[in-house]
Length: 322
Image (cartoon, rainbow, N blue to C red):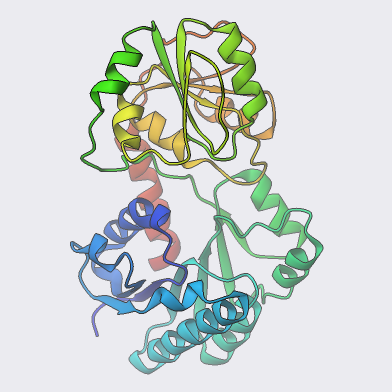
């Protein structure tokens, strides 16, 4: 089998498609096998050496989820050993069984590389305990923020900081005439695409910025004339492209927000709050991110996305293959 590594997305979330594609293309021929769930298997049609598994089991309760993901990864750890491959990448994993995988990897002589998305334990004692059980000598974690790096370091885990790539969430959606008619009544459009957004802050800014149409992802109804709300936007990309501001009133602490990096791809002005996430975003992308308390300005600084992403590719390949 050609290739030096097996990559597995054990949870196969739709939200990982674009970033996984970036990583897989970065690793190129070094990937001997990419294991992905059937629900999104077709989305990776340009990736060679795909292997499909039935991910319907992931929706059958917590216990089945835990056992299925454990058996899935164990299967490919054994395959890696048989094929003489000593590295396995997990783009996603179940926090409840990863410590078992670390011990099996130790026995098999395989190094595990984990991408930390929603698996940072925070203050949850059980999650912290489970992550602390993971063998440091066998597992290396890629973290997207310095605070996540600090969290795992306190749990005596081996971690590396890796910037989150700036990518386009490719789609072919269009804006409806109803939306365009509504938007034409306002000077600016502010898209609030995060489900974790502080809705109270959005309502306050609807009152403060009457010349701005706020387009908000939420299950709640905001009864403001300059606000559109939906639980899910089928034309997400199209709205992102025409928006003047991307407003992210979130505080994810040790995690990052996908819309932040999508907004950077399109060169949009990003508005954040004065909190851990906002300080991280404004510090990393100064000139393109501003705090909500000031006067909102659409001006941005030119950012070299290609060079930024190439640095990530080089770091990833250096870590995994040199």
